Image (cartoon, rainbow, N blue to C red; front, side, top):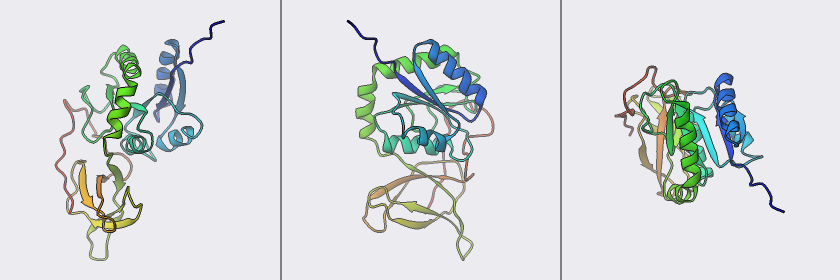
Length: 217
């Protein structure tokens, strides 16, 4: 007696209920098992109960932006493939600083493109998992404020020794992957500063990937 194959599991993360419902119905119609979450924090709680094959995540979300959420996923769940989605970019190219295997432009791309991306990532899941393990995911860090001299600063937690240390910020520009050496263990920490403290996606559609020029010292 043959048994039915276990359906592939998809986690859809978006702060708009209508988007979550549309994506879920579309994926369920293709035979996928779908779970939804309304932001990054909610998604991390869902990940305690399930391990999806693919995560589809919005970038512009309150509480924990998709940028930060996907960085956490790449570090903690490197075997999970990810599709980032947003209506703020007009290109299918994955935006700079976004740790995703594919990108879906909401309002621009045909919904069938999302289904095609899901199917393609499922086919190459083992290859993607190996590639992810070779990557060093940057940490998304909110600006903490200003020090006693009025200089903006951030607090970085080393991904190796887990000890934290402050770092001054000299410019507030577009997101860029930066590097610094841990003060305690000399590990190189990659990070991106989220100057908005919650969301870093652009306010209008752009014709291509975000080109960053920010720097920190």
